[in-house]
Image 1 (cartoon, rainbow, N blue to C red):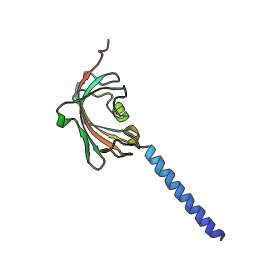
Image 2: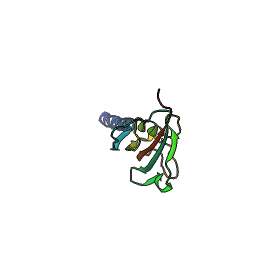
Image 3: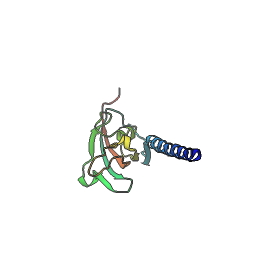
Image 4: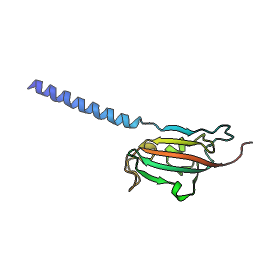
Length: 142
């Protein structure tokens, strides 16, 4: 009888450890930034407070596209660092040059989190964005 209890206790301990490892691995996912097209002689880099004009295509990990500015023919315009976009964009678009292209792999906690953005983005989704910075507008430095 004591041996059975030990086996049960060990089994439960293993289950708890597996759950803890899984939860921690989800929390340690980081934003990945890949430069797809670098700009030589960059005169100005994006910073918080700049108004950016971006083209983008967003997909899920399975390759399903959920949004893109390209078919609309107009770039998406917003002010960086003002909470107008997801945190993964706020971080991943810093220090870009006009004409630069990046690939952002954004973990759920820097995207739409566990709630997602139904119906196209399920909760807990990692988001993949191909982005191109078209224009930077902002205060000129003195």
